[in-house]
Image 1: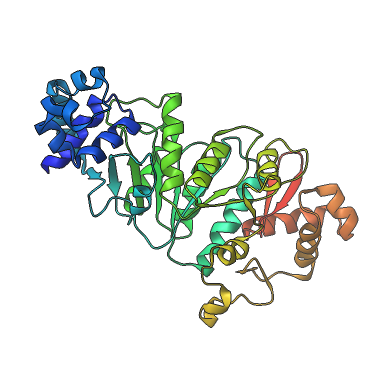
Image 2 (image 1 turned 90 degrees about the horizontal axis):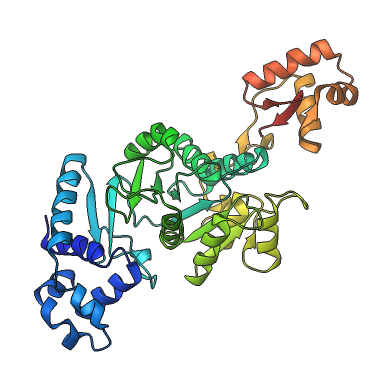
Amino acid sequence: MDQEIFYTMALTRLTNFNYQQALELYKAVGSAQLLFEHRNEIGDIIKDASPRLVEALKDWNEPMRRAEAEIRFMEEHRIRALTLTSDDYPQRLTECPDAPIIIYYTGNADLNQTRIISIIGTRRMTTYGEDLIRRFVRDLRQYCPEVLIVSGLAYGVDICAHRQALENGYPTVGVLAHGLDQIYPYRHRDTAAQMLNHGGLLTEFMTQTNADKPNFVRRNRIVAGIADATILIESGARGGGLITAEIAQSYARAVFAFPGNVGQPYSEGCNNLIRDNGAGLISNAEDFVKAMGWPTMKDMPLWLTPSPRSAGGTQIPDLSPEEDQVVSLLQQTNDLQLNIITVKTGIPIGRLTALLFQLEMKGVVKPLAGGIYHLLL
């Protein structure tokens, strides 16, 4: 194990994970190892260091024992530690004034990929938000085949973003609010396991660190800082997504939001952010890539160009005239009840039920509670 990594791990423990203080110390001296070697002269090196800090930096015994235990765990589980000076450390993070001096990473994604986006939002995602993510990631794949998608592995928008990334062949990295000895929420462990082979898991926390509430806010700054752009899908008037968007703004990173229906509780945060010029309004992947100055469809090979009979750049399966009639109706007004569809199309309800089942098998519609049908394309 690199000695600088070892002493950096100990330093985070010594400062009780006060990342701002650890970063200031690190930059003031130049390395964690030098801090250790000159631990008895800290008051001379850092003139404004408090007496309490000077005294605390003299005793490295417990932090070094903790670092040794962490290293053993890392070696057993193929975890890498990346410091600010590591070649693999996310270079976008180094531009942030509160960057972690060390991160723990397991996976195969390039954390310095040319294009990285963070997708964030509420844990109480609606069907509308789920559709936005599915369409956005699917269509983005046609414009920009190589993008790393980052989120926080939480319920709602986060896990949906990770799963859609995997489904569309994108690498995806989850930034955790705890150590790599656990997965929280536990029910996301299967998705996390898939991400290790097509993305990864990242944290600044050592093992035996629980997912306590303050850790999520700290996690959010990495989600914001590691990416070129942060995209807010759905959010209430308050929430972690808005905090992450605000952090991204403070880093001078691009922030975008999808608008939602006025009066809907989980559209309020996005709508307010757009209203206050805190985020650019986007409605699809094309809006996003144009705003970022990334290649648009006209720059892509012809085989990627959607046919006229497509939605959002994705080919609609061959449909019968009656199926096409149902799809056209749902394209005009989505989420309609069965009895309304039969009235508007004139198709008998028995026949319509069979048609909707066929459309469901083709992945075109999705039945919802209350006899409502939702168009997926």
